[in-house]
Image (cartoon, rainbow, N blue to C red; front, side, top):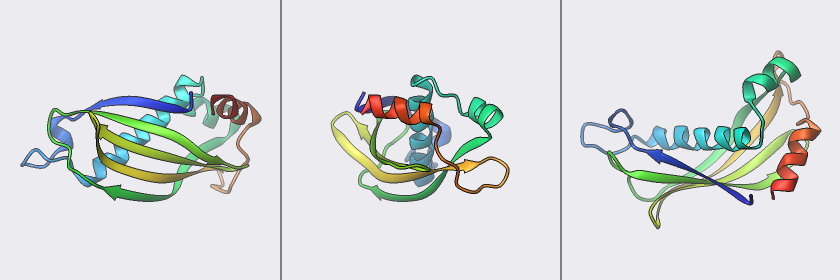
Length: 134
């Protein structure tokens, strides 16, 4: 799976009074897609925290808003792995309505010790899954 596609329906709560999606909701949509990609690989983040003492946190994000989504749109969040290292992963994420690109971002996610919030190497079993996936 070189990319992961997650459908999102725009609900009223995602929009302003004019029915336009709030800019921050795009970040939430991308977060859901990354979580579901990990879940599709058999990786539950709650289990990682409990058993490995590890959590993932967004380190940085470069985002481009291109076109607005509106209430009731059916969107697709496309996630691609751009780069991985010992303690971080960079995702390319795009949100489409049909063929129309609405938003895209580069998202660096850090692997952290759940107690100290210091960098912690990504477990080999996750790197293996991501490697076999790309």
